[in-house]
Image (cartoon, rainbow, N blue to C red; front, side, top):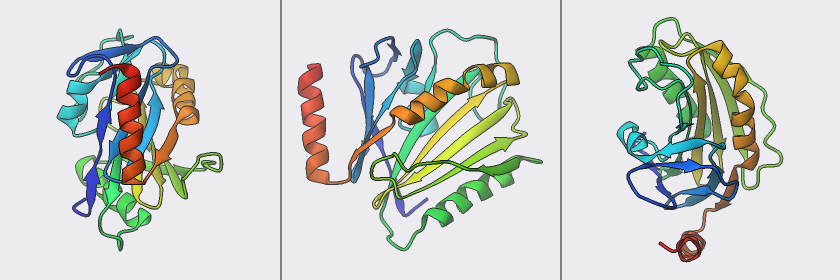
Length: 208
């Protein structure tokens, strides 16, 4: 959307490569002008920075080793299981959480015939700084079983976190990884000065 600015990701180790997360303390900071939030990759998953960049998102987590050979998919490269997270800063204060979701879903309906979008309950009461949330399950997407799509809103930012698998077996088996991903999600700040301090502290502690 024109009234939103996308976020970028701060990460440890090497830029431009897939980084394995075998350590519970190996987190990722995703930030923009008015947001910084922390996410943890599931154990033995990688954050594929290059592929995330190609999609225009800030992060793209997938298993280090694929479980199956995924079928061809016109929307996501042949990847069997994935989670991604992205944030957009609000520039136009007149834009609303609801209008952002409506536009996103309108684009999906245009691209995919027979797609089914179902809204589900989601309890965000324990998520700091989050003032609104909307959870959807999307079905009938080519090459995928289902896609879980969570939207979160703070005073300054809209965040989208997505989980998907190519078949029911993989989707069901690893759904708990997505639930843990959401449980560990932490919005840290919307203050640009504080964001700068958080990022500088993280760089110093990680040594890069």
